[in-house]
Length: 223
Image (cartoon, rainbow, N blue to C red; front, side, top):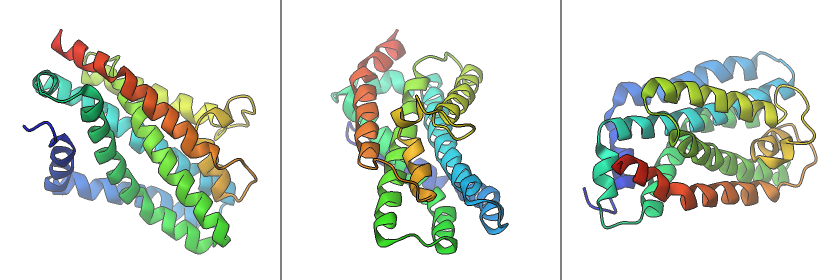
């Protein structure tokens, strides 16, 4: 595998797995569209979309990376003449693009049912992209810890629950909700006031932290 092909490898593998790709698009729509069209409070709909972003990003990227490590692929990648940061960035970008596509369908329906102002569309788009990148970066960080797929599933679930709670999606969390990009997506969807410019900044900080720590992931694979 060439050093610059990890991004393409992830995308091609997702596209070749037609059944898995079908499920990745159908499941978010099947879970979220009834919620959006049922006339439940907008806050619950917004929370559902935000939790879906957290779950798909954290769970997908962490479990995928754990499986890559178990298959020995990470060991071989560690020997490539490419920096771990570049490889990790390609992995996060590939998974983030897929997450953007699969959650975009229910999100588009939500915006049709609850049309925002022109400025609100920008807020939603920026917050959505930031939350997706942050969730995938968080998933890569989670994948550093587990030594097996079973542990990976456990840590991913715990992380999703913690991120959901800290972002104030279950109950108000005034001291922590502004520290993660996910609350800003929720706030944009319910048209609540918020410092939306912080969303991409927080996502960039989280992504940068993961890229800085990525050499440790590959060193662990070599050991």
